[in-house]
Image 1 (cartoon, rainbow, N blue to C red):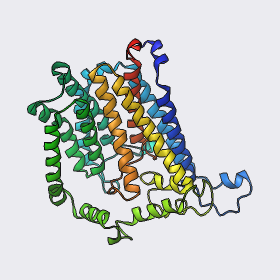
Image 2: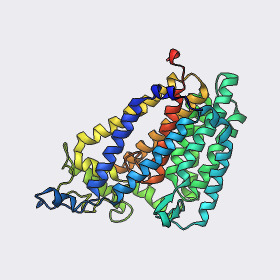
Image 3: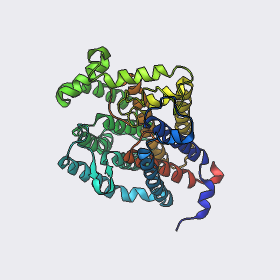
Image 4: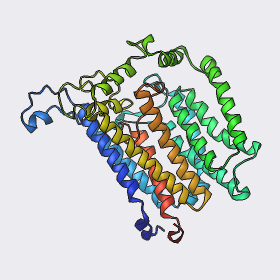
Length: 384
């Protein structure tokens, strides 16, 4: 039975930050996806006639679905996740295997498409939640017994929980999502106080494995994208086009931006590819300028630091691991998305949390918010 008194302990700062980010994303999508304004608009109807609200309406529905999932994960005591995770984890692995029987979308076999409801589900996104809970369970169990997470055999066993779905996702191929899995694991291991010797060994394995992944796991197209990342001028009309146009749009925003719903924006003129999903940050900075982009990044930092604070204040290891795992997922998305938009990271097709259009990612992030709130609400008030 859900205790209604728990609602009094809800972390409203998290709620306000998430709502602010979602509102920015919704307004940005409506401006970016509008038919180009030409400066002749004189009345409100002139502006509304050019708005394309198709993606705005779908994103609102996505948010409502995510809100329902948030409430479900809020009501169930997070301690019960320990006993349910093995079934959810196996279910996610089954979906990641079945997905290979579907058609590719944008070169990736990663979505179940449901045309009758005009929706698609990306199991690789939902698997992030399963990895967070599974790793949190096994790492916290070790911490409860021994005071810290360690032991070579135990580290190998828990690492396999992340590596199995990660390999399946890389076979799609979706290296961006695989990178998020690794960040989740690293964040949870960090709060588990894993030995620095293991960290150094892991860094060495990663350093040695990157060339092997480049030559043996990546196809020619993905290798070429890495080459273009290192040398953007190698193919400005092909693989480097997205980043080149993104940086031009960001630079054109200058300090204060061109504004939303104004004429002459490169995003509205379709020069910025994937302008409402992967490269939405370019459209935002073009409209709001350096100042607006900085404010957006500060909002993300505020949310990340708030969740780190909640993890520190959490009194049980399982709850702390859950919160830091969700924090790692959010941090990886923000770093990777903005990094690829400004040319500091390879293009991997990772959306910007709560901002980019997309149902599966928004659903996953809303579930993450529900988990963080769940942990915070169930902490003893007298020990805060």
